[in-house]
Length: 244
Image 1: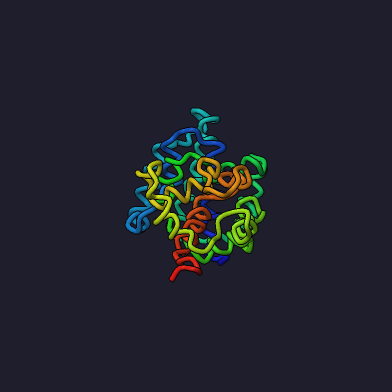
Image 2 (image 1 turned 30 degrees about the horizontal axis):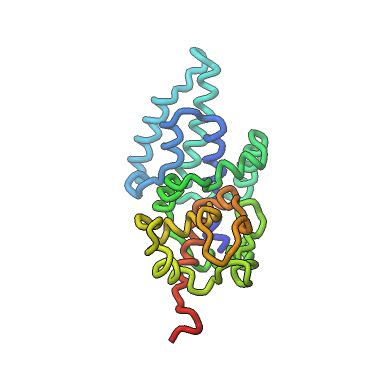
């Protein structure tokens, strides 16, 4: 479990420094994009570093301020490149990254930078880049794995009681009951589940009450956690107990 999560924290910490300090979209793409195996070959790495140094010159005599800024950007891009190519920072290096990050941004900004958000189009696009793990999703759902903010989501508290639709058979109901409704004609099962999590009051199942489910899950999960949660819900394809 911890090994699975650690690489995400590396990307978050290195990416956050760029999010705070680098305004150029091209630098952001360089830092955030996944690196292909070919790009990690020694010759290709050398070419990338040469290109980066050309794009971000460090001419301290000509323009000290610009050179210092580029030095900062290069350091963070190099860190991200190393992580994307398989390097695992030591605990000491991770602590240094955390310390540097907290000196530049408060915890609220850090969480917001890594949260999945609630823009449905953007979230669905982000989900295409990750693979959900239903077991981790189950831990999140049951409060055994903390959310991005360190707290429990608390899903099972309502969905295994009478306040909300039961967990069992979630995907079956989505597929057989929800997606046949006119308002969900163009929805996929993932779309419906994500919208139900991020915008729970947009559709209320008959017999249940609005405004019971928190509306801030988009600020409390990163994209991987949301993918895990959706994967768990999609594994709930049981028929109701009273169905023959």
